Image 1 (cartoon, rainbow, N blue to C red):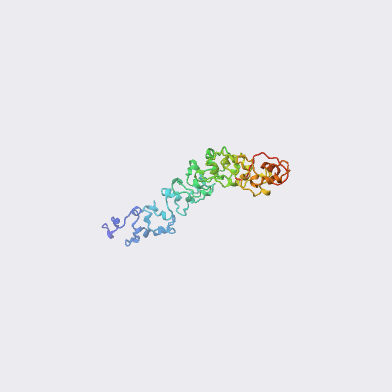
Image 2 (image 1 turned 60 degrees about the vertical axis):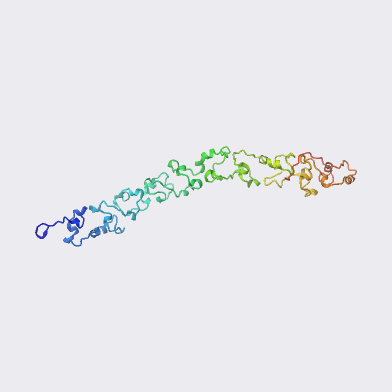
Amino acid sequence: HTTNPGWKPATFAIHNNYYQLTGAHTTTDCNSCHPGGNYNNTPNACVGCHQTNYDQTTNPNHATLAFPATCQDCHTTNPGWKPATFALHNNYYPLTGAHTSIGCNDCHPGGNYNNTPNTCVGCHQTNYNQSANPPHASLSFPTTCQDCHTTNPGWKPATFAIHNNYYPLTGAHTSVECNSCHAGGNYTNTPNACVGCHQTDYNQSANPPHVSLNFPTTCQDCHTTNPGWKPATFAIHDNYYVLQGAHTSISCNTCHNGNYSGNLPTTCIGCHQPDYNSTTNPPHASAQFPTNCELCHNQNAWVPATFNHDGQYFPIYSGKHNGEWNLCSDCHTNASNYQVFSCIDCHEHNQNDMNDEHNGVSGYSYNSEACYNCHPNGSSGGKKLIKKVIINPTIR
């Protein structure tokens, strides 16, 4: 106080001992806070004086957004309430990544804090439209940016959980780096056919040699996406060698033994020479049977086999001899020469009885060739010259 009458005017240099005056508070008239000169029970909380400011603020709208009334959490006492911070922004929209370092106006242009979008595309539609690698718009990528991107600067790193909507990733494709298929980070016009990426693998494959054998380049016809291309199938095997009968159920290694170079034999004997050599009933090798196995055998199994013994030589599968023998050696007593045969060993005729029965028969002789010459069909009547050819029985 001075000594003026009524103690006025008066100053209050120790005001800060009771309530600190800073910013705009240092220049305001005392009556602004102490209306009518009433210095009793003056509020010491911001909102005690500024409730009207809080209620009338529309950018942003404090009341409708239920902002706390602790004004000091966001404002200083600077004039016009600016600059202001918003430490509780994450209560309304979490700020992460690049969002933590951008200016408020980047999301709230012109200082407008009302109706700011809370979806990525709400602010980044232009980024979506202009993205060319990959071209988001032409590929109809979803606009839920958060499905692939974080808020890191430059949108990187990015994931692409919906890759299977455009190209299914299976097998070895699930563990390769993106750059393995999108070289140099180029995500535009990536091939969607296997050979588009694997032409070199096709060209260099030597077992079997894909190029020289003119294999189709539709890799998926034989391969899956498993690492190392294995296991592989070969549905077009018949284009190179027809698989039928027993060949349809054997493993590839039985014929190829791991070697698919394309030099496998295409004749039966090429694979089955050991079977030919070891067959003893009849003994193919010693009897000098032909090696074109298909004359007697089919690909289902070695037995039963076809052999026109009845039509070419003697009826053993029909007539009286049908079912009367078990082994080729029953008649062919010389394993090294199937032109030698015996009738007498089976029939056990008494020579004297045969001599009497054939008394007067021209050319009669008690031996097998004579029997066959007169009984070429296993019955009486007629003569037939003996065929001197190699016989191909069917029993193994």
